[in-house]
Length: 499
Ligand SMILES: Cc1cc2nc3c(=O)[nH]c(=O)nc-3n(C[C@H](O)[C@H](O)[C@H](O)COP(=O)(O)OP(=O)(O)OC[C@H]3O[C@@H](n4cnc5c(N)ncnc54)[C@H](O)[C@@H]3O)c2cc1C
Image (cartoon, rainbow, N blue to C red; front, side):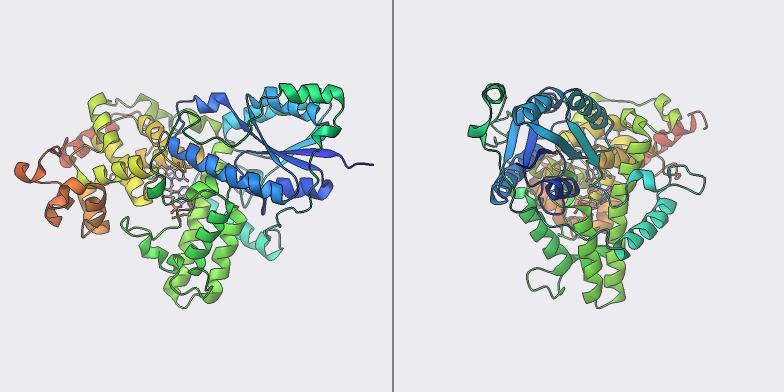
């Protein structure tokens, strides 16, 4: 008897290796077919970034090849998942449809609808976690509540990850091999007719073909695809093919992670967000690096990088437990904040024309490459909210519209952290952009890279933003005075109702 056909729906897990849902499907039946659905709602949504679409399409291109090598195929559909997946399941006579779970409120609602539609047509639906080292239901405070504060979450999370690692639960599972593809010629006439009606794409489109071309691919440090993610992880954690660990950026992550002119971070955010890499692969590579670390500083750096993986999980858990985060500030009094919301200032910020070079360099990096260094994300977010007194949600959307790694949980978490409206108990965090530039771009090399029109300006002036009009040329004078705006922001904040 022919084995049952299973469908595996890829969403944010664009890889074959260590894909828990796919591995479970392949263990149950070799007759697995992959599917990815281009949802027009997403393609037309306000949050779409050309850079992210580029990364997605190029990752899918490689994934499609990998499916062929594994003996089966990755189908591409265009349409609403709730409409097209049940039709596909019927056309190929799939007994089971399976996927990995997501934390985003809209994705969870969509998944519930898709599951109901499939079950209504007699298909079995199997779902479980893959994109987190610890599932959100499994980390609770002593009183059984989800964590609202990162520090205690980190301690619990680390303990659980370490225990799982010791128990072998995190050991990556191999990519499936020897799968059995679908023989369309052997389908019954009724099924053949259903196939003809499916909105199948013949090939993976480019971002441009989908109407959102991205021309910054060469500048983007995040490289699409499973193989590139593995190579990037190896180079970061192991120093490259030699495997000696010598020269790995991970060993100098602290303080290298704070210098935006250097490649001191992994640039794996897009790969982790779209699942070209699993969090287990990332974690285990960093644990393996402990064995070759030659100093306390290197060991401490590894710990700090693992804490960043914990931030990723903290924000995903938070969004899972508190879906209302997606709709606005976690702290209710922030809903009443009297933002200035000066549209022309926001535009200046978005375009990198505020007259504060460190901020503008970062915004130009985002526009040109689809990515921005974490230190700079914190600085430009603080600047928009606390110097320009613009609603942080404007910035949140502007980031999503350009980031290659744009991710609701991490982006919303980062913006709420910067705005002081989130779960973090510290109420007011205000970055002075000149002080930040002086500390983290002391030679102004980052500023000069992204603001080439100011390359001739003295370093001290680039850092302070106090550039003489003749030197400045067409570059704008500072839009605001940090000291005055900071005082104004504090006064407005003081007027908010106390929690
Ligand atoms: C305002 C703001 C918006 C942000 N928006 C996003 C976003 O949309 N998507 C995104 O992935 N990250 C976001 N971040 C977090 C962080 O800036 C990026 O994850 C990081 O810069 C990616 O670079 P990297 O891969 O080299 O990170 P590394 O320093 O190498 O860190 C390793 C991984 O840990 C995770 N990580 C690191 N820092 C954080 C953090 N603070 N929060 C959550 N996860 C983290 C990422 O998956 C990252 O790839 C945002 C931060 C701020 C302040």
